[in-house]
Length: 156
Image (cartoon, rainbow, N blue to C red):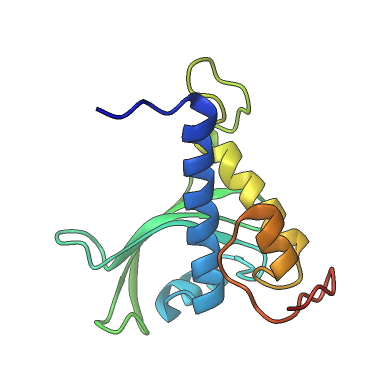
């Protein structure tokens, strides 16, 4: 049996997962129907991140998950779409769940709350002009490397 991870290691794994998810959806683009639903509700997608996104899970709406907006609001969403996720059919849920998120950086026994880690990822990704330049990749461990960052001017 392997050794258990300490709290800091567990937090690092969760933080990495949030950052990778956010970076993936920024780099590859979110489904068009979700983009439309967000735009209709004031989401600036270039300054917001997808924290969780489940697609076509049996018995659930087409797209559901959690996003963190440019205003640092956590939004629980569930939308129904066509099969290609291009056309929005209905919005089942679009709720501000910010008050329910653990945004504390010091929690006894668990360390940093998941909400605090998501806020950290949002702030770090928004500090860079692109999804993640090589310098940002080096600093934050993001695996996507566009050729040039508009903020720090680092290039390959």
